[in-house]
Image 1: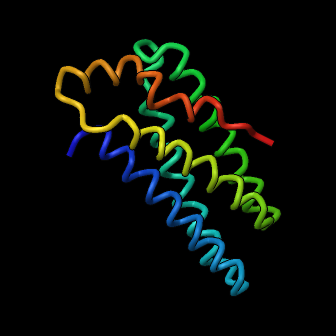
Image 2: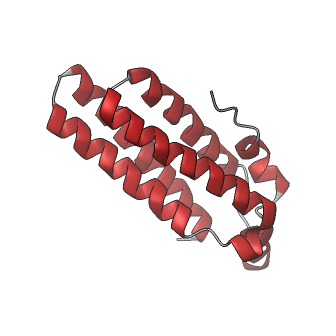
Length: 132
């Protein structure tokens, strides 16, 4: 599995857990809700801690800021249980996932270059996400 495929898989998992958190919220299952939010937190935290700020430059900084925002919103979600936050986070993570998917199939040399620069094609949507 390529690094790109792993990242897309992580975004898919985070989105799935957000959907499950929403279901647990509907059922008023506090423990299940908190567990799903924690799973999303772990995924986003992992994505944040694996950013290479030296090689990734401005894109890595923007992704880092976005991941930090998402983590902050997860704390807010856990305390307020506001379903609107789930929808906002789902949109952000979906846009990030689509950005990575748009990179297409890269050869080894191109994949190494995308790790360093995260090509404008894949990150155009990522860095244009508007945060409310």
